[in-house]
Image (cartoon, rainbow, N blue to C red; front, top):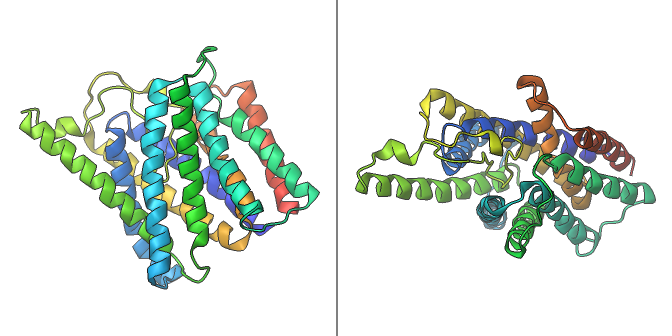
Length: 318
């Protein structure tokens, strides 16, 4: 199935976007990275309109804007639950919930029908999501009820983002994604502006509101986060510098490419399959970290990567 291949490719590019977002968040606050990524992605989307088209109507704009709101909710809840920890448990919970919610929607309300091979592929994909998203070395710490609720809430918001995009018309072109990114840009820019004004009033200067000062998570506008590098970020304020802004822009460009592939996959195939494969986005982050930063990949994550490819093959044959 072409949609499965497109969705899996999009998932790996999502992971690449999160990798660069994580690096940017060593220099800039997470919300600043998210706002910059959203704005740069919006520019790319408008540049792609002549090539990919856009049919404007109120319904498709509304679905796109609603998906943007869900993306912001996912980011807020993601930060909140990961701040409570442990990430090694709450990260896979968020990813699995984000996959299961639209899968259930597609197979019930959406009326999608899969073969035995398809259902097997979904099962393998869910196991792969847990293994790939696992962060070793956190210790056996039981998560709090509050953390679990927030993790599930973040996953549901990510799932709702996918469901909302799937409701847009197949002939709407890039309109839903443009509305999504415009909504994201507006909300995050307002937040950053308020942060700058507050910093200036405290006499700390506008730059202090932009620099990372603590454990920061890079995030993409759809609510994903670079969890692999969350613990590597600096604990003291650093200079943002041009490198931080450049990395945030790269994050935004890659995220838009992944989103365009996601939109194409949704229009070519079933929501349940696309949701399961999109949730494998940490695979791209892990592979880039291994190649670029020479980080060690845990055996459990290698197993997850192998299962991810197996799930892609099974779902492509479904």
